[in-house]
Amino acid sequence: MIRQTSLAAFGALLLAGGGALAAQAAQDHSQHQGAGHPAWHAALRAAVDAPSRSAANRLRDQYRHPYETLTFFGVEPDDTVVELIPGGGWYTEILAPYLRQGGGTLYAAGSERGLNNVRTMMTANPALYGQIREARFPLPADAGADVPRVPDGSADVVLTFRNVHNFIMGDNPVAERAFRQAFAMLRPGGTLGIVDHRLPESADSARERTSGYLKVSTVRRLAEAAGFRYVGASEVNANPRDTTEHPEGVWTRPPTLRLGAPDRARSVANGESDRMTLRFVRPE
Image 1 (cartoon, one colour):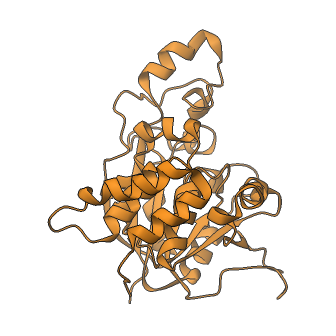
Image 2 (image 1 turned 135 degrees about the vertical axis):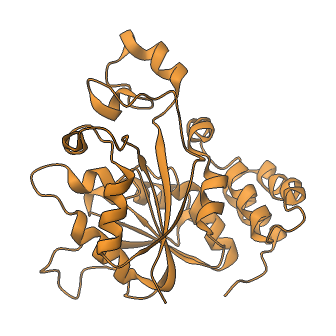
């Protein structure tokens, strides 16, 4: 169900968390709604452009295209959204105020330790982030009833950004379990949105275990085995300048820059990794 988003209410919320300019951002970007665009597009644009976001995170927009990515995934402001393994909270910084002003709900799902950054955000700015709900992910098979979790069939959208490669790496891969649990979280008709580092289909599949890059076919296989139906892909996060051939894997690319100063200028000039942006649905 879609509620009509109030940009005035959004401006008031951002005013509480990000200064007077935030309210103006919500108002100014109402013009971006445009003919044929749902009302929530303007609210999403305001959330992306809000001065409450950190300057460092905003610098990454040129590579991560949050407005276009979340529009492709169809994230509406009254949705229940699960962000799997939010890490430093780059997308959380956009999603939490966007969903809060629209009456939606955001779950941050990860390990106990892995949610520390999100907890710091919640404590530092409760007006914007205080309503985020915690959940454990992936849940161990023996998880008790007292472990916080996303209720089955409750989510409209599950999102994961640059995490699926971690599900298949290491000595204890969790990919199959992770996709099954994501499927269970979603209501029928709900969306799974994935962004990850893209390995060419012609590359040696062994590189998926060490490089941080994945083939689209691998992600599709995992998702479809869990019951998802593939909807389509966007090239919004593509970067043809990324060869994917890096001695230290994807972590050679910005923002990690594992090789440091000797490779910094070239790496920064070439941008972040080439990324797939895939949308799946839990069938009705």
